[in-house]
Image (cartoon, rainbow, N blue to C red; front, top):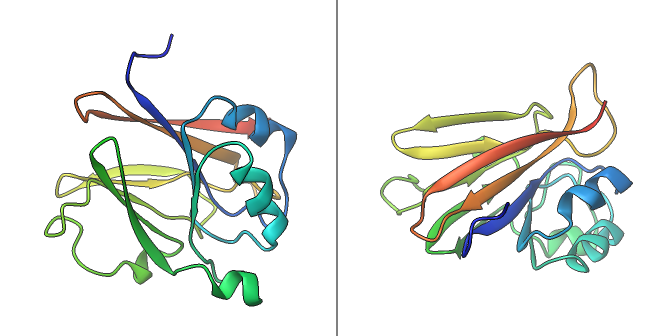
Length: 159
C-alpha cells in the first residue's frame, strides 16, 4: 500500500536504446523519473516522458544534437529533497553535503548499489537496458515520505 503523500521517483540508468516492457511496468504509477544517462536515442526519452515528468543527464554513450542538449549533471528538488544526478560519479560537481543534496543518483557501472556517505544517499539503479556480463537488469524506486524520509527499493526487471 502506498503511503499517503509520499512521492515515488523511478531511478533508471543505462537503457542503451532499449525500453523493456518490464521497465514500463515498473514505472507505472511513479510520480517522476530520473534517468542517469547512457540513453543512446531520444526515442527513449520520449517513451519515458510519456509516463511521468522526466529528468535526464548525458552519459558517455549519448551522442548527437539531442544528447548535447542534456547536462552532464543536474540537481532537482522533489518533495523538499535535493537530488543530484550524474552518469559517472567523477562528474559530480560540488560537495553534496555543503550544497544540501540528500541523494546522488549515478549510473555507468551497470551495477546496482546503495550506500550512505556523510549522510548522503548514493544510489546506482543498475542497468535497465541490455544485460552486461552477469549483472542484473534493474532499476530502483526512491520513496520520499511526506516528512522527507527516504527509502530506496531496487528491482530486478528480468530474471
